[in-house]
Structures are given as structure tokens and as C-alpha cells.
Image (cartoon, rainbow, N blue to C red):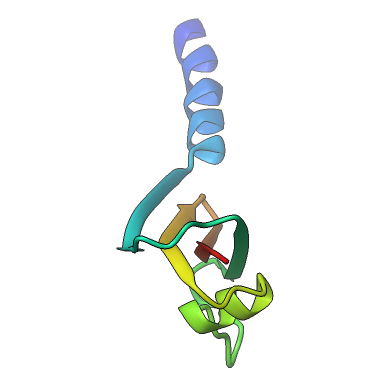
Length: 92
């Protein structure tokens, strides 16, 4: 019984602090990239999504003042209650 009293809180803490991150390149060009722009949004509990959200390449490039795109990466960071979707654009 003493062992269960120690194991259960440790397992519960591991589940609460666990997260997963996935990153994948979408586009790579020959252009050099010095600037970076991002566009992102978060979803809480998988159901509370912001309305009219744009995380496209054009939006991220505009935020970073980029006219020639070098690379585009999509990143998804998932936690227990919150998931964040992000588009990262580099270029000049």
C-alpha cells in the first residue's frame, strides 16, 4: 500500500506535465533567410478554437516583413489541455 501511495502521485504528475511537439518542414527554396515571421493559434481542451484565425504562409510572411520566402515550417505543440498550431516562415 505504501508503494501505491508513492507511485500514483508520480504517475499523475507525469501525465499532467507531458506534452508532445511535432515540427515538419513544408517548403525549402534557394533563397537566403535572415528574417522570421510566425502565425499561430491555440486550442483549449480541443473545443475552444478562436474564430477566423489565419496561420497561413502569407500571414506569417507579412508579420515578418518577408517578400522572398526561404523556408516554411509547421509546428504543433500538444499538452494535456492546450494545443498550439504555428507556421514559421524565414526569408528576406
